[in-house]
Length: 482
Image 1 (cartoon, rainbow, N blue to C red):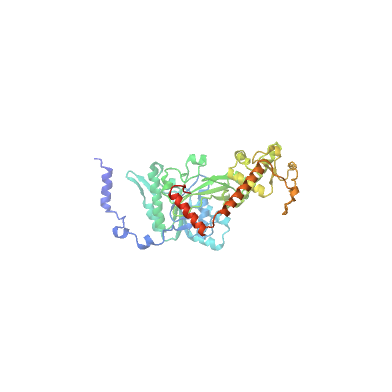
Image 2 (spheres, rainbow, N blue to C red):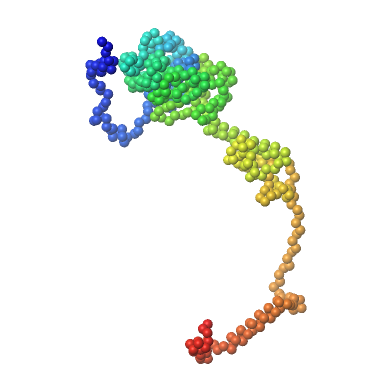
């Protein structure tokens, strides 16, 4: 008689007893310090690169993922700066490998340490704090899928029990394909594997890095993003950090909308041999992420970090860009002038597309050339001037005959005014209307003067009598009111 798997699972839970996952109402409430104190800051192992949590490290096979992480382990153990970043919390490193044997792993670490030229003190640190667990010949898995779901295995408990007191700062699990639930489990499997890695990190008080391969399409297409890892996207979504290792074959690099160029120390031979590596920090939760790719040149087991800057942020790159635009404008003006085309300051704006520049970039370059003396403004010949178009741009070194203005006749000097009236014999006699108007004006003035003199003074007895008479006449209607 067949049994229902779900009933079997419930029976097993009933035997084991109830779960104890929750804090309960009393302890679930926030403390005053949690709610009003200093906000949470993620504990970092390597500043701006690796935090104490679960993260993924992905690359195609054969790119040297394991060796790069051994190089990083040597720095985390000794406290040496890694890629120009501070080791915030040095400590031991546990390497769990299901792919390479213990002998291979330690041989690589041997050569990495020799290339670093470690002091005896640093050698002693690595001897005491580097741990290699080879499970390549065992069926060990951290996460396993069964008919009832995907769950962590007892291997997780074993690791925590044996290494929780070892003072670890980081641990690597290599590779996901052999220690995880398998790709048949899809997103559910990857989500549970990353969850298990966080449980492992909490138990070890260390960063846990899952080494994983990329999909074929990613490797062939050169895709660089947090979902480069093979399998379900939950591998990136449920992680707290994602790093991708890639090989560079060209000097120019584009990443997240920014352009980069490799420094001069990188030779063409390095690029051709595949020794130039780039580490992309796609994700870094709870912290400020620097998206600038980390450039490393590998020579055997020696690694050399070469910092680069964004082209749009580098002061040198900005200066070189402005200089190139400035000389491009001067060359354009020279070519047009040689073809007999004169361009004014304002007309130059219409050639922005031909120069491959925006109007703002063009105006900045034009003003810089004028200010620096590479361009000058010359007067147009009189016959070529139209309204406000009176000048054109010309290279400072070009010789051109300046157009001349037509000579203007000098103005006749005005005779000085004299305060003395000329003699009567020299005065011009007025005739016609002017004389008549003058005569009429004179006669009117004279008549007004006579009338004024004939009127009695106001306030005098005669004046008061005249005023009273005038009022009576107005009241009787004999005279219209003024």
